Image 1 (cartoon, rainbow, N blue to C red):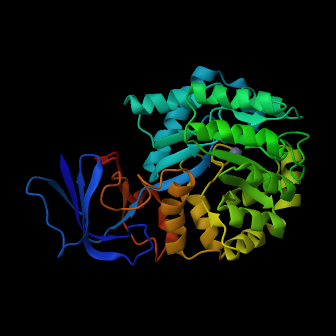
Image 2 (image 1 turned 60 degrees about the vertical axis):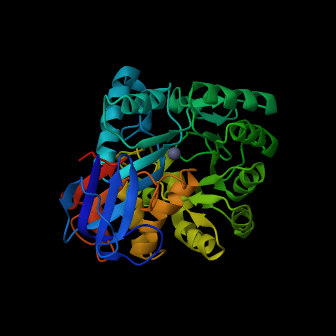
Image 3 (image 1 turned 180 degrees about the vertical axis):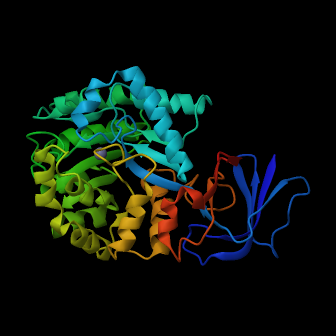
Length: 398
Ligand SMILES: [Zn+2]
């Protein structure tokens, strides 16, 4: 089945200027042709969608979510919801995420295999959702606070245990791995600036992933932990809140991606009377220089990927556009650069750069048709009325 989207402006995600009066030809699950109406030969048999006045962009990508968390005021309350119910809830959340124009997500830490179940449910067609790259449980050293997220952490100490923990996640179906290189804001007693797993421990995890061609993401706030994670070979650094110039240089030299999840900043503050005070206090102490640090990282050549930490307190699935808006409103990027980051670069960060992230011939046909121009007004990404159509693998989803 061929589908043609005709007459729209095409923003292909490669960094090139938009194509006016464009034509996107989808053949089966892939893009068969893309360009201006004058230069594209249309297949004779095709369903044609007239999208004059619309803008087509590649499907958006979020590199950092937790699909079984529900944005509850205190994440501890998630533990009180039974796993089967959480699985159904997560499936619904992924449908909402896809509806909002996000056709791929990387899930970096879920409890009790809920991520694998939801991913399988989408693959088998029981429910709609984005492409999901998922890590299984988060590999962490013995430390305080892990019980706060029951079933989400795999505690491992020493190289051998870390290796085994990685193998367990891969056995269960993980597409990537996730390690704790520093303490966390959201764990009681966690010290975000303090390093946790050592270089050799994380390297064992990275090695096990790479045997299967899979990458490792590192939760890392403090500078020492970031440097450790980069040295161990982690592909993406999550948060990076307290990076110093050495940590930034290490990321740039290694080609590691930074997923700064900055849209979290205002959330705890806005709900300070509901969110547990230890989380509010820690985030207050840390986020002051984060935008400045990310600006330094960009200037040093560090590659950025878009991630929201969706599912955490008041940080709802389907609101994933928030991070794209944040990088624009904070003055870090133009709308065009933010869109390339949320598509091409984020696809590359999660190892899907060969198959998605841009509207190019041969790639999977993941695309969003917008009623409005995001380059003129990036906030339209947050308006469900303006997300006119969503395609995943050449099939219209919404
Ligand atoms: Zn997270």
